[in-house]
Amino acid sequence: MTQQLSEVDIRRAADRFATKISWLDSKHSFAFGHHRDPVNTHHGLLLVNNDDVVTPGAGFETHPHRDMEIVTWVLRGALVHQDSEGHNGIIYPGLAQRMSAGRGILHSEKNDSWRVSGGPEHTEPVHFVQMWVVPDEAGGKPGYEQLEIDHELLSGGLVPVASGMERHADAAAIRIGQKHAALHAARMEPGGVVTLPEAPYVHLFVPVGSVTMEGSGPLTTGDAVRLTASGGQRLTAGPEGAEVLVWEMHAGLRLG
Image (cartoon, rainbow, N blue to C red; front, top):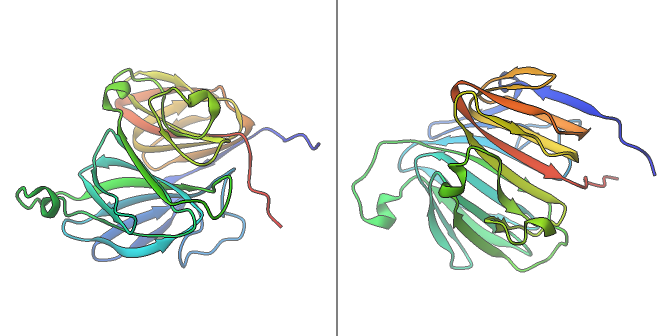
């Protein structure tokens, strides 16, 4: 068995791929869509980390997915999900959401919550991060789950958001079909401190605010860190606070 070499790989916000059209401003941490890069396709089990802003009334029309666990985390505004399995919901900050594409599913995601709730039309963009990890097995049954975890986030610490790991079976987290992965989130007050989990693969993303990472220095909005055979570093929030998303992964993709 080959031992992994410890590595801390900092990826700056400005170096991400970008897709900008009339209704969408999207930043991609990994190769995505027409953006190709054979050496930047994933980290651990994580294939997609898209940082999206969608204008009011617009969004992603109905499109297909298969064999992917898709977790959506809203930072500002509200996102409407509808899919071919009959699931629908309005996702907002503090609400964790997971869609298991399984053997195949169609869904749409739009910034038009007033059409569902019947409230007044709004002018606020929705800002969200969408993350994809591979499932344990291909061809499973499509599924959907959402869970309010806003209260847990008040602690300021890392909170399990979505996990397939056995140790999170009783935690306030939605379940994903990947037993080697868990997503944690933290809303950090200025000066707040959290400690990264230790795992063969850890992916840290700072969608809001700034932090200082022990041994690596400051990270600002949009920055990410890919850790291999590492973890345990302390994060300290900057003067404006921060929100962080952390994937803990105990396996990686087998390519080739």
